[in-house]
Length: 246
Image (cartoon, rainbow, N blue to C red):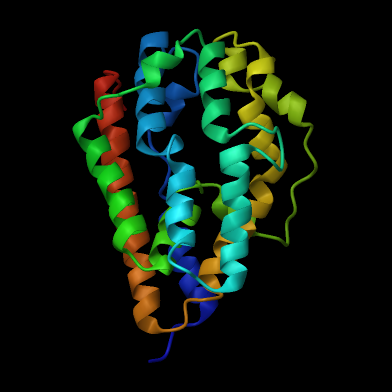
């Protein structure tokens, strides 16, 4: 079975990522959000995917994709689980350290009760990584979950970003500007700055280079589209729990 041209397929996936931009983000990145609302937001983020992101990567690696893909997944897993390429602490650990900077206790992130839409989104991520093909799972986890509305810009290699001072970006971070978090607690942001560009390129490469039939393209596109629908419902649920309005 033939395929649609790679660039057309890539564009369809990027159109999905263009929509990963929830209206509530302006609240969570602004100065009027309360500590109680932030805790709800971060508890759901941690329990839905941050804590177990290395597990998702491990499941995909265990599906035995091609060697090049296994190597990219292994590098990503090594960084997420150990911080070995950057700060030398796992990303879930760096997240909890950031929460301490906000004044939250670590035990407040244990046994988090998921909101209904959060539970559905998490079940979708489990379903994809446990029963989906490695291609579908890699697309969902490394492109959609790990990616953002900025993916189109980051994939446009013809317009490289000007080098940014990471410490200035940290000083401009909403948690520092609006919530007085000491910049020392933002090692997770530092780690992301150090490796995120290479991870985005690797994520798109492993999917685009190995989707070789029209059926595979359709399945990957459907998986991303379904991920978007689940994610929007999840973010709507968090916004509702925080009593936010558009």
